[in-house]
Image (tube, rainbow, N blue to C red; front, top):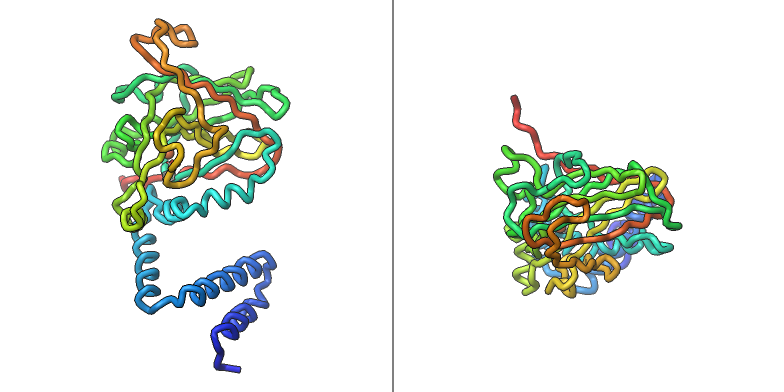
Length: 303
Ligand code: BEZ
Ligand code: FE
């Protein structure tokens, strides 16, 4: 048969994929066709709407660059990223909860010693972060690299600023756990911030009358050999966007009480030089495999 009604068309497209050699690829493509065709039938999609969708996806691709991933942003605001996270992390068995990677895992994460200030010269309230990495039984894991990154006091990541090309990373570092599984560093208290709204995803957020805000948080990627890579955030307790994160990424267990402190010294015995905040958060790793995502690398200028 060469002419199809709308349901026969779906069957024909599914059959056209029947010889796909990889069974998983075949399954994914056939299910995708079913869902897309169901959507078109259910909505009686008009040509104008279909053209709008094609144009929107085209512009989403055109907005992507080595340090800007508009498709991940789209996946994030539609809740797809958190759904993929949910179906892949159903059983945590007491391990720390996971959340979205986000589009700002980019560039170099400079190795820093314990106690280092990873945000030197930045405006903002000072914060001391201390953390310990253990297995599910509480055994400390030594020598584990942890990438951290967060927004500044104006809500921008280093890679969003023109100064990134000349000044390099800030509020972004790699620390390695000591023999007791610990890391600690100084930084500034991040604030809540809007996701980038100067692209098609932002256009959708505005047109659907959603707010673009994410509650304040610090990103952590903990990559211990023999354990599932842990991609997570620690959220600052009390933030007003915790209940309405634009990317649906908040989990109760990831909210930390960040204490305002006025002690003259920080936990490592060094002078505080004014009021500061203390973030304490420990990570429990789940045994398993998996490769951690690599940061997107900005293009280097040709010499
Ligand atoms: C972030 O936390 O960096 C982020 C996550 C998802 C979308 C936009 C930003
Ligand atoms: Fe973030």
